[in-house]
Length: 130
Image (cartoon, rainbow, N blue to C red; front, side, top):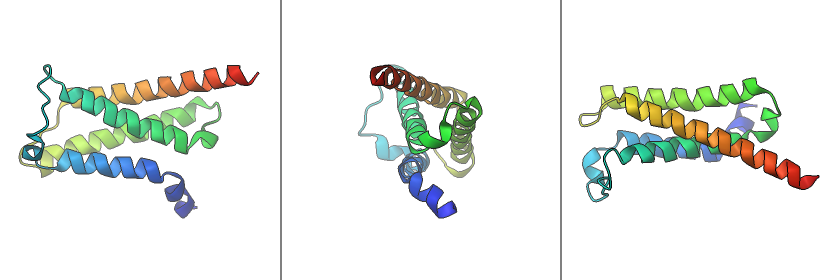
């Protein structure tokens, strides 16, 4: 059963590992990438990373979701909890990074936008099938 879950969620696991590596890497490695387009542009990166993670979780687990709201809540909690854990790892296990409330907020915003996009896609696909 566990092996099947890992295989089914391989894309989500890969995205989670990429987020982990990027989040715990030395920030000096990203000096060549300019986030100075506007203040706090890095928050958009958080939104996109966690939106991608959430969307991949939704796609990978679409048969399990059905129409039960509780199943959506479980996936949202998994993605959001992962973001909180990453923030805490940054605070306690890196020298040049810190845990930021706004990062967690934008992680959650990305997660919510992914769920909304998923629901819109589901509704539009359902209406075109009829």
